[in-house]
Length: 184
Image 1 (cartoon, rainbow, N blue to C red):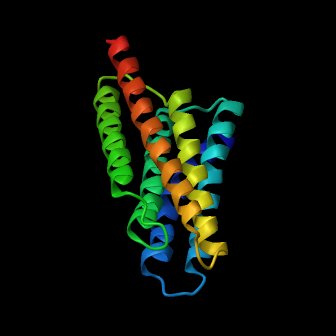
Image 2: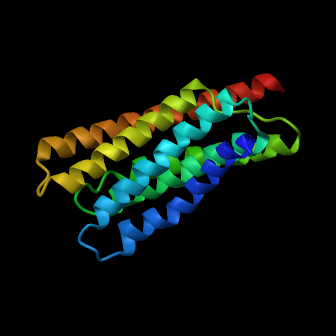
């Protein structure tokens, strides 16, 4: 039974993405951003928990190696879309497209190599990228929830944070490509 827990948490994260999207983009509930933040935090925690449990229970699987990063990508891109296209932040859409491009490229490469029987799990650099993305998103959504008006210096700090995240995301993608080509 224990061996299914990490993958079940990954599936749960997939299921939470449309719930998150609903509250960010569709709901008219006055607490919609608070609910979206809660859903994102829960989904982010399942990411930490499934990885930790997979290692602790020694049940690392090919499904987890492929689907866990994919669930993270969907969750992060969903949240970034909200931060880019909705007030109060309107983060540069370039950040969104840089991260989208990197994630699509790495997902395609990961799938191509998986078909060849080569599974390349996320490395430390990729994990740092994910933590930075999720931390920034949680902070931005928390500001959105708890501040009636966002001062310009906070806007600037959020913009700078996500610019750094975009650079780290690109660097982790380059690192991933280097790892793949070293295996060939």
